[in-house]
Image 1 (cartoon, rainbow, N blue to C red):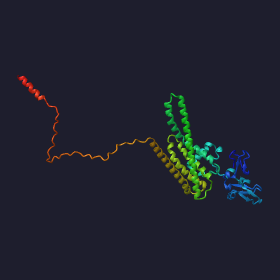
Image 2 (cartoon, rainbow, N blue to C red; image 1 turned 60 degrees about the vertical axis):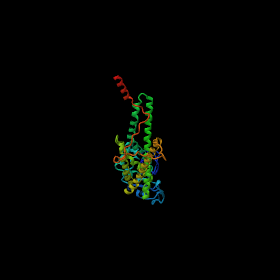
Image 3 (tube, helix red, strand yellow; image 1 turned 90 degrees about the vertical axis):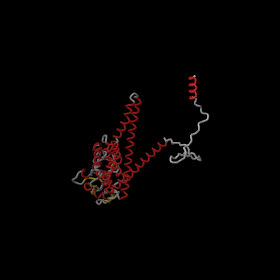
Image 4 (cartoon, rainbow, N blue to C red; image 1 turned 30 degrees about the vertical axis):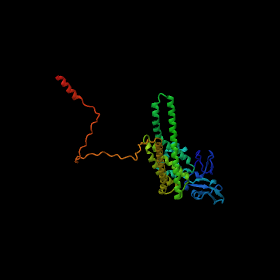
Length: 366
């Protein structure tokens, strides 16, 4: 049992402030192996096994059987039983809580390994009640690593036209490059925060369903922290080139990891945990898909309203006009006489070519 701030040995000390660094600590901040630890009365050093202390209801108050004094847990001291050391009396602590001692890089990849291959260890070793800040920081690192492929793709798509089309305008090109990089970075941060909010809502609904179906062993803070730690499955999206296509696989993998982690955390059945995890996931995804579909349909309708098509204007139909009747066609089998030709117009010019020829012949004969 060591201080989380300076790694100072706390065995044999009453809970309070660390004598080395001054950080406050409590027995509830640690997970003891009940059969390997004992608590001592502050008045007569009468030892009580860890199983007895753990069976007391909160607040942990009782009357000492040795000196008949009223004592509380925060007045007592803890030590390992005889023949054991402190490491045997403590259960394995969650590695991300001990990242200062273990190393941040090593602790990060160990938690990622838990979420990918052994999610039940997240529930079995996560004993901190105030670890949500560290869980949010862990999920932020995983999600920002998964967003690298998207960031690189957007940067390449936006920066290549700038470099190829603005070589002669160096100041303008520099401003565009800076604005593009800043915009892509801001977009990635907003996207990651939105995903974390999605995980928080998911964890809230999951914990509510667990409490509705029966008792839970830990508080809502543990459920939210476990949900954020299971986001380590999104690290596979950081695979170059093809990692972006693993987003759906990562989400499904995270749901499976949450079932194992929360079942181990609350000590409940996996079927009960699966119901609490999958129902909000299906509901949130369905609402999100409907919202995106409604937004797309609304945007298309708005664009069509800005550029309406020109209607075709047809002339009005005539009204109260006489009917048009087609002329009758004579039948070949009937004996009706053929129609007479129209007489030539009276004022038509006469053909004088034959008279001129007669006059010329008479003149030639004379």
